Length: 474
Image 1 (cartoon, one colour):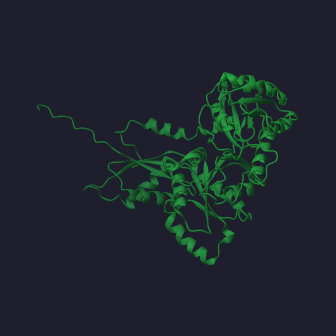
Image 2 (cartoon, rainbow, N blue to C red):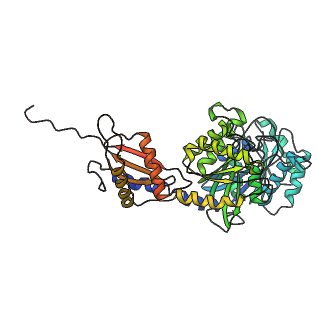
């Protein structure tokens, strides 16, 4: 039982699987040392389209409607061997009120925290009062400012670009974000303007990445604002205010975390359309790039199909998970009893996830999230030595052998934990193991070794029979 069967020769494969999950650490360090470029301007001048052109891929949500981007959103970019971070912002309106005022505040904050600023102006319209107001603020800034005259789709608009010198921001770079015209020249200027390293480095290196997910209007942005102590995400009573994922460094219980607020998942990605489709893609990407996911559930409402869809997406991603039951201040005794039944019935796939009852509005128990996150991440990174694993599994199978299949009882010859993040067990057997028996092994594995807050994957490899040599004389 504790010896690897000699019919396998791919032992080196185990080592390769072990190292695959550990490559992200160096990426975290590189991310912290990148300078930041903020892209600002009034609504619908093509900022997000230009961001996609700078990135060389479609990341920022784009739609032919003013105001689609509402939060400041960070993306990794690279040009001429230099890596930097691009922050896309909502349209900046100096006289905005309500929701637009919150968007403008996000753009101003991005300008104040970036290493360089790229102002985008619609060359086909020329400098407006809003553009002049932006320029007035930036002329007082001590950081480099570049001016992009966008929508110069042909030679006829080049003559109009010269008038943008009046903004006092230096030479305007004529570009077409839609067609890519002169984008290389702009990128060269950006690289020249950016410092080699950001102005301020974070004191804590490599904060763990946390994604906030849930259905629309469940309180994700409110929770992020409560954690940061500032109006970090735009919050409105209208469901679906957040479209792009939003990054925030949050100090929680003496540790810095990188939180990502995401758009509410309404529909399956392949059935969504327009802004909702790209927001769903961004949310999925945020989950995939995170290490642990906080799934927010509205405790005051019955568990919905949307909630289950979000949970399925998180489970399939293989990320560590914490369930936060929000709006607990609205839950009475009758609802609590009903909620327990709903959770027992609906959360069968994530019985291993820790639950925290919180209120993003009042701040009730939000500090309890940090211990739950640490527990989930410790489980996600946990590895059980091969000898200990096989000793435990030998005793388990001796007490409860696998069910007979096709008249034969499969044997488990050897087991190894082939990887972490998520923990992955590989069982080498003489026959197929039923799904129910694999779930039994996982349940007993958790009882013995813990792994609270982390998914555990169990893969089965069936030994292939070697062909018998042909008898001589035949």
